[in-house]
Length: 225
Image (cartoon, rainbow, N blue to C red; front, side, top):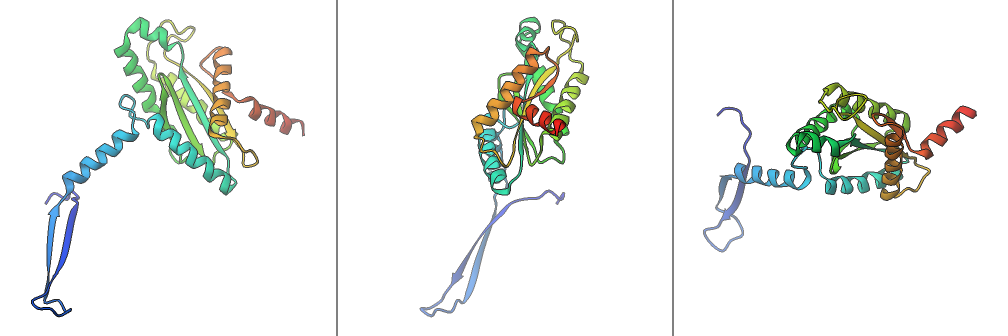
């Protein structure tokens, strides 16, 4: 034995020699179901994982968003969402080819999980070159820090993108939003707020993070008080 864990399935049957209720013995049949269990785990992973980026897929993200938003309301906790989009990615594909585009997207996705350690957050591919991060029990200020860390980590990859001026390498724009316990935001509301913030980040020049307008207004109100 090399110490590798295996899965076993056992069936226990009682043996009776006559019509009495007392068993005369038992028979135990055990079989190795490791291969079956591993195939089951692989199928489960395929159902929840995006094939290209190895992040969670959109279907799993939608399920988790609904579950976490319901839990956040019940526990009176905040929940935050970050949308990320690779800047000028269509131009990147046109310039370098779609295979290079897939590699770039995969490399960008790979830096995100390390920025979420200890947060309880998850990252998923939302569609095309758009990625999403879900952060349970995380407020707006911490979300801003995480979004900036992801943006900087992507820039540090230094993936050449000559058409993405003035930087000359692949960058991302981030938009984020936070649902407070006092709000009754739906899943679509939270996504729409983060999407609006992402649009603002793009319009302001790309390669930056932007808060949604609701969160920004709350910050201004706190600074005035």
